[in-house]
Length: 251
Image (cartoon, rainbow, N blue to C red; front, side, top):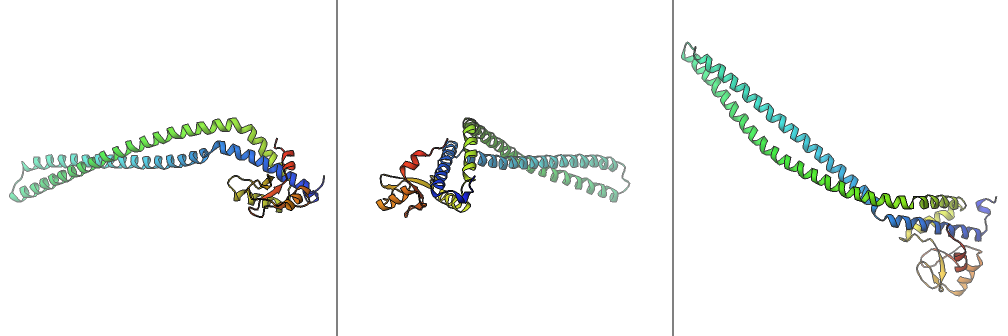
């Protein structure tokens, strides 16, 4: 078998043209998928962010709930101490002991009031957090519904085109193995330059099949000879004659 470098210009053109038609078939499959792969990826990222937010809110709710329970326990402790001090006040022997016990009782009553204020404030914050959690859950639910719908659409397209896509990917790899690196680099560079991915185009009605600029008759004659690779002077695409274009198919 001849090496890649030993292929004639005509053979190189045929292989390039075949590769272009194969890649165009793959492009058509990607067009069928449209923006779905990107939309699915974006939705997955968005849901991940919303879920992380939901987790943070749940952790904050747990923290506030623990804080409230701590303050309730502190109130119980203060109330228990008050009951103890009140009982002790029944057995005081002098004014100094009475004043000392009263101060302890006042201190515990202040502690109770402060704890009750903390609980009220925490309950207000808790109410807001619970609302925020409900909103976050709804957002996640809505986004998951949209994601499942988009995934369903994408999976159907993939199922419908998987066999064809696998076939053309194999054919594309095979065609690429028969093109020298420099020419393949130029082909890929041109393909990336245009949204329609056309790097090899036929001359149609005396014009470039890519940019539709007129091709002079002498230039067309040179293209038909297949002696050298000729590019459009306007858009840089590789040009082939209509007969060669019609003779090559992507199967």
